[in-house]
Length: 274
Length: 193
Figure (cartoon, rainbow over the protein chains, first blue to last red):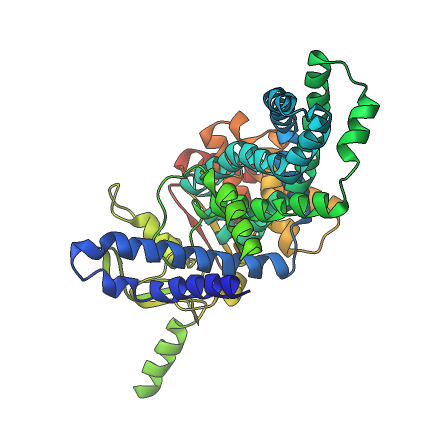
């Protein structure tokens, strides 16, 4: 709780410091990177504020939201499935030898299932989506900015935050858990295939042994934490191309840093253990 | 005399567009300095200049896409320079704006592009909306291409579609960036035949 409060105060301080960032710019050149650092967080906070206001006030862009659901979700499906399958195979093959050495071969299904549903599945899904969908969002919004489509939306009295940003962020948040389920499924199935290739085992036995001690507490929190990953991916990919209008416009769209979901997961683990 | 001055001042404030002492800079570069202009009802005003002389910036300032550093911009008497977004959008609903490259939305068809503001600002049935859009596209000679995507039509055709979209909301005034005389003349010819 204390950590969360400290994080909130830090973000608030960044947002407040943005208003004085222009005065700070008059200082020596050594303060340039520091000012930019504070400005970036301040811009991000203002962007998040506008996003929340756009997402929770009517009218709602339901058609565009459904369209983004398809763009970000169903079109990421093959890649996510492939990533999950590869993860399952690699995990099984690399873990099998170690378990045999310690005489714990029978635990292999449980190790594969627990590893995939608790961490590998969510992280792999977030990495794949941040690489594919987020880059697509950034490129699309960047192209719209350059060709004045976002200005045209403003000129038509349509809030671009509602139509472009809120729909994409919400779609990311809702698609990530569903895509994680797909990753988990393919990871576990291909884990069985890889195990069967080494030593035949029936799928039924594999599933039974793997899920024997799995509870909803093991499955739901890791799957639902991908909502936060989706939020990070959506916000960062949209923010790079649509900073708040009050402040200086950003440069060309940047790819979503892959470390955001990883660092978010790390931060969450730290909070749980403190 | 004082009454005449008061009348002149009040008439000025009801002009469709009134710009006074406008100043705009980007960083340290001042691009507009002490600009004054007014556009009367029914008047057509052309802003001419070489490329890079911030004609587009001036037009964008008149609908609040940029905020000036100082000065006043009034649209039908309403000061828009520091207007919050919601009332500013009410002003924008009555102003048509055609961008230099038409700024059509890439993911929507020609018909959907023109229907975009209608769908959000007017309560219409699908049939009524479709009919209205077809009329606007017919005015610019693009009714046969309504189902096409912007990438499938030429630049000139995109500008015509942009003009159709801008004419939806041009109750107060219409700003056209770099309109082409050829298809404006052809449009006039079509409307008279």
